[in-house]
Each structure stands twice: as structure tokens, then as C-alpha cells.
Image 1 (cartoon, rainbow, N blue to C red):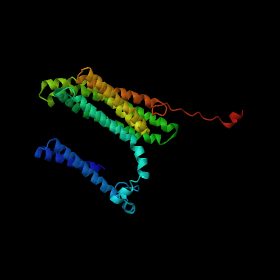
Image 2 (spheres, helix red, strand yellow):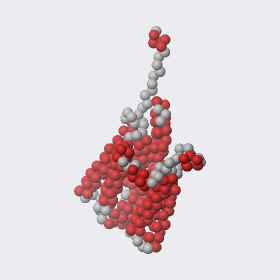
Image 3 (cartoon, rainbow, N blue to C red):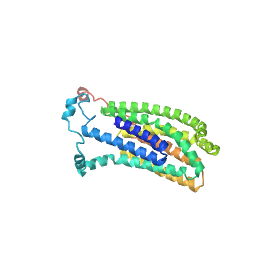
Image 4 (spheres, rainbow, N blue to C red):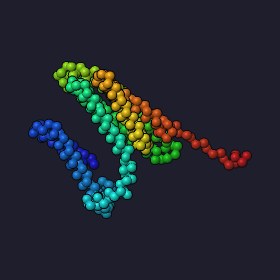
Length: 314
């Protein structure tokens, strides 16, 4: 998968240079390059499945075991036969929360773009500048989510009170790191939001409006660091369905807040505050859920040692 991602990314980058800079295709060239890179990556993954590379339980150094194992995808016909409902329905039921979660994220991004364009060309340009600064900063929270996803289940798999206590301590440590990261990246985002807009545009009016969005952007970055941590902990503890249901709150809140901003004749500045408070409120909601019974932060009930039989008899 790493090879497929790397090759796909290189193809995308090379075609971006050739089609956009060389042929002047603009957005059509960018779209063509992206799709081409993804097609190459998928083709490499299919090839890996056909030869069963990387899926051998005996280890990658055991050539004999690889030769004796049947490919996971021996032929397109075998793949089509495997798509029978009896096999696909359980997979669809398992993946449904994740699919709905991703669909709501796409829906939110569409509304965000709609709000950025609702205040005119100048405000849209300011929105894009701020978004370009905001996006790399929030990506720094992704390792926090991955840490929760990969480390917490190892403690829960041990079972018993000791396993749950270990998971709770680890989750608390990850949360502390997320809070520190959110504070530092938020302050950094505020500084960059004030200093960098003039590097993106020579229009002083656009740069001024973009710089005015630095405060709500900072709040959003801070909230999203805790958001990533909590999302990872929810998924690590098998609560994807509940997370998908709760995520519907974000869509409702942002659409309602954006409607209020538009109907009241407010500005892009206020729309970004709706955006930031959505992240903060959702982070608080999930923090509460994680502390309820069944959550990773719920207090572990220690089992009382049973009294000896002799003492009981006495």
C-alpha cells in the first residue's frame, strides 16, 4: 500500500507539472493528474492482491509459505463471485457508520465552500487564504488520532480491570498531548493568520479581511486538536455508530448557524466563528460521552477481593 501511494503521488505530481505548467490545462489538468494517480495506485493494489504480496501470516521472508498461499484476488471472475450478498452485507453493515461519517464530512465541506462564496469575490479570496493556512495546521492533529486508534485497543484487548485502566491512562496521556498541540498550533495559526495574507495576495483589502479571520481560525485549530483525539478514542473503543450519529449534530449546527449569518446580513468573520464553535462544541460533546459508562475515560470499578471461605464461615 505504501508503494502504491508513493507511485500514485509521484504520477499525480508529474502530471500536474506537465498538464498545468506545460500544456496550460489549469483545473482540468489538475483533475486529470489526480485521477490518473489514483488509477495507478489502485492498479498496483490490485496487483498486490493477485499475488498475495504483503498478506502472508508467516512473514514476508518466508517464500515457501507465499508460494503455497492462494492469492486473495486470483482473477476478476473470482472477485466478482465474491461479491455475493451473503458476503457483502456484513461488510456493508460494518462499514455503514464510516461511510455516513465520511458523507457528512463531504457535506460539511460543501457548506463551508458555499459560505465562503456567499459574501462576494473579495471575501471568498480572504476565505481561501485563511483556509490555506488553517488546513496544514489541523493535519498536525492526525497523528494524535492515529495514536489513539493504534495504541488504546492493545490495552483493551487484555481484558479485565487492568486492561481498561491501562487504556484509560494511555487515553489521558494522549489527551494531554492533544491539548498541548492544540494550544501551540492555535497560537501559531493566529500568528500566521496575521502575518501571511500579504504573501498570498497583493490586494490589501483581501489581505486585511483574511488577517481579521485569525482569531476564529485559532479557536478552530485548538478545538480540532481535541476533536481528533476524541474521534480516535471513539473509534478505538468500537463506538463508530455513536460517533456517526453525533456527527449529524455538526451538520445541523453549521447549517443552522450559517443560515442565521446569511439571514441577518452578517459577514464572513461571523461565519468563521460558527465554524470554530462547531469544532469546540463537538469536542466537548464527545469528551462527555467518553466519560459516560462504557467510555474510555469512565472510572474503572475495582473488584473487591472475595473473603476467604474460613472467614465467611466464621
